[in-house]
Length: 463
Image: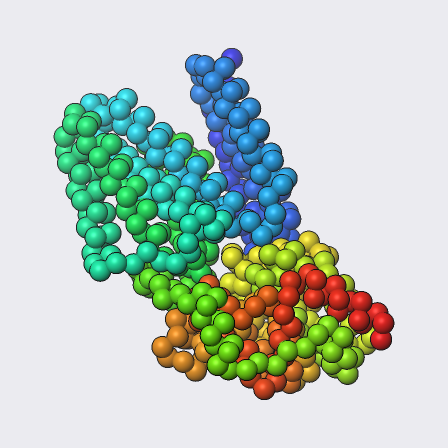
């Protein structure tokens, strides 16, 4: 059956519109669910249109691939916790970039003797991007999943070696374009790209992995758009361009939120001198801190008029979003003003805290961005910090030798009282000891966030 190309183009246009709408919807917490639905529908239409546009040679392979995708993807979608979304994004991105690179390789082997120089150049570039993104995304997943240490792998001449490998890969690509019959060069180019991607992300600390994922996402989009030109697939060109540009913008926003540049994130090796928990223990012995129990915190809150709750990765790990919502509700019932302060890079990806709090049905109008909530802290009676370490560290404002220096933070230290809920005195991803712990207006509450907050709920109900 032959399908009128106009119908295929119409489906592609609808899919593109849905992709654009999904980005618009996901820019606002209130419409983010529609963003996901719009993107899913657009992808479904795109797949259907592509299947209709081409003559299928092996239906059995197509059905097998779809079944494998469902078997693997469904449990991931249903069972992966929201705390693991960054690493799930990384591994999905790895498969996407690998698919693009492998399709590019197949196209090269099929048409290397008949394709023009432009097509071969695009194929070489997209294969390099695809393979390096695959390797980098796999390392990002391993670091976020804590399968390998999150510290940067730093050695003398690290950046020189990495750049040299990329230059050699590009040079091999140029020779491959000039002499397409030398197909042996393709696996060499792919291997060099894989090595570069591996070394690039190995040299980046765990704290920067969310930004790295966004940058790699931009690479995936660019490689997909390039492949779209080769395949003459308009949807792939537009979808890849949207993916690449949105990843770039997201990485830019995150870098600005940390007062960092792309080059500093990719090649700075920030966090190499991670002190881990041992440094936190030494610091705790050398510098005393004030600690409280849940009942004492309840007493402080009873006398407050305004409370700002600042969530972080510690809340996500403990899956304490529902409990923290219960604390907020109890405080509001007592006539206390409650707001939630959200740092752009709290957690492990932008919007991480928003997603978790929305899951707990925290009203959208109680979620305040950093720029809006920071001026309110001097008038806030109590700031409750739940595992948000680096993004509340005053060293970002005062210590020029800190890896956090210059990063905009939540100004919780300016609140009249700070309650910091944390398992231990260990530093955050940056490896920096948090100066907030030792301020006279800070009280530490040690323990699992969910357990501490549950005890706090019980104490508030008892008062």
